[in-house]
Amino acid sequence: MSRILTRRRFLIGVSLTASALGLNGCDAIVESDRTNAVLKLAEGLTMRTQRLLLGDDALAREFTEADISPTFRSNGTSMPDNARYIDWMNRQFATWRLEVGGLVEKPMQLSLDELKALPSRTQITRHDCVEGWSAIGKWTGVPLAALLQTAGLKPEARYIVFHCADEYEKSLDGSGWYYESLDLIDAFHPQTILAYAMNGRELEVGHGAPLRLRVERQLGYKQAKYLTRIEVVADLGGIYRGNGGFWEDRGYEWYAGI
Image (tube, rainbow, N blue to C red; front, side):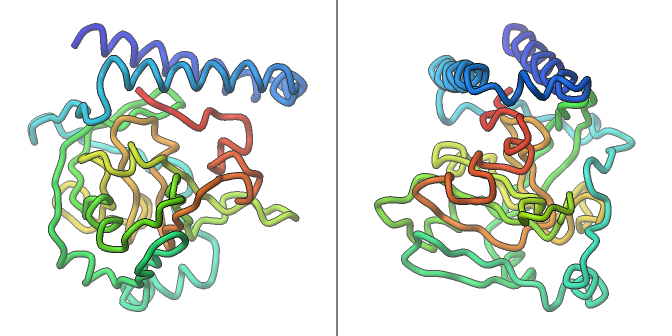
């Protein structure tokens, strides 16, 4: 366990260093084709090494209720700034629907009540943010694997993309909407859930109501909030800027394993 925790701290430190480079104006380095190629190779090596050492189904550490943090910061957006989300919120999300589509045999639209009626999983885990803070929370939601199995993946399916109601950055090319993605290994991991409750209560807006992703073996920016649509795809290249996530399109690693 000590080696795992040491590796976790090292990876968070590496991510923070990369973030600091961007914040300090080193965009030329980040945008260099050569640098990007090296970073992609390193990212792929990190992913393969972690999965080789820990296994595809290894669980992130789970804690007890006594370990739950007294405060849990609301990272990123705390209130999506668009009329559609505000209307859903004002109606207590009664008209909100989660769409499941793309390379599936059975496209679906599920209400929040329908999701809550499905078999659920509760887990108490630690959230590690790339900004350097951590907190422990209790999450309840639907295992993503069960939803994907119900929808039925087509043979060419390779990635699961999570679209959000959060326009995190206004942009002329429309790439400012928050989104994230996972490959099938992490999508079918037993701790990957679509969470609708935190610490025994329904999600608050600041924490991603009505539904957010929890993928417990990765850093905080992978935990997409305000989910509206799940899209199953063969390739990530045609989605927004093509790197698999909002922050990944801006220089972060796609695989943020810890």
